[in-house]
Image (cartoon, rainbow, N blue to C red; front, side, top):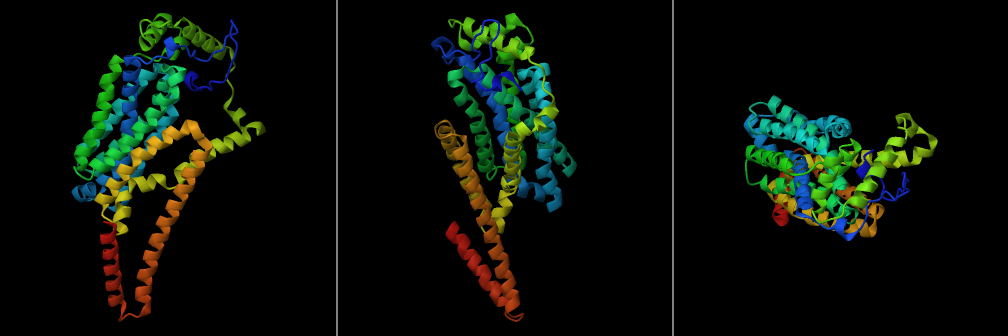
Length: 390
């Protein structure tokens, strides 16, 4: 796959037999303003991705009222984001290798900005769907190229924390959209998403290209200039530059493996675990709950405004705790805890709506003459529960 995302423990030998990990010397591991600014510009795309995930829930009521959309029409709008995301994800690797990481982010931002503007000024459902589909294509590319770029520009000693900023900004965009979406119109909310994309488009003109991508193309002068800019003028980049060159040389000497080789028996366990985790994450119900949280709260008898604000407040602290625990407790324990929590939450939500439907059915089953009285009592109990939750 990409050089910057290959395992650090791999120790191939080039012509000098050197370890190809990035050196951990003080000079090359120091933080520089260019490195921090480049990471900030890159994660603006992650913020836009978070905004796209959280947009459909707080905007649902306003869009359906203003454009008179049916439930089915709005469901298409909410879910079509994933269709564009799949197309963007398929093409992201080839585009990033062809035109570079920085230009790929710029390319994706053009689509994201156009999509947000299409939603903000939409007069019909067609323009809403076109905008949402375009955003999906853009963020599908962003989700790949941003962590690759950050991993390739940061020194080894800071790589984990800098790459983690990608997930933190995604969560921040999601939470901010949930919170602000209850206060402003859906058109203004779309403009916030467009603003994040525009900020990244402008910032991309002031950050360097990935040194590893430049080295891969043999553009030596630009490669050394970019690495010098990222590490600082006084930093000694000779050792790190030599390691990167050896790494690229090793990759070029390797034969490209066939895609069908993944289906060999020796890779079966790893393939099932990797693909299974991705599929189960998407099928676990997290996406639909995020897209239609406001409707779920209203059906449960809770104010959607309060519910979305509470969700937005919880999101960022939980994301920070997860990032802090990732390197200490490991990935597997966090996966087990989060998956168990998600399973329990989905079970409780389904059980609550099951009891609600059952109580309404029992009201009608007791006696037709008493059905009105029973339903009145049910409604009073529902209002009492809602007041208690508030």
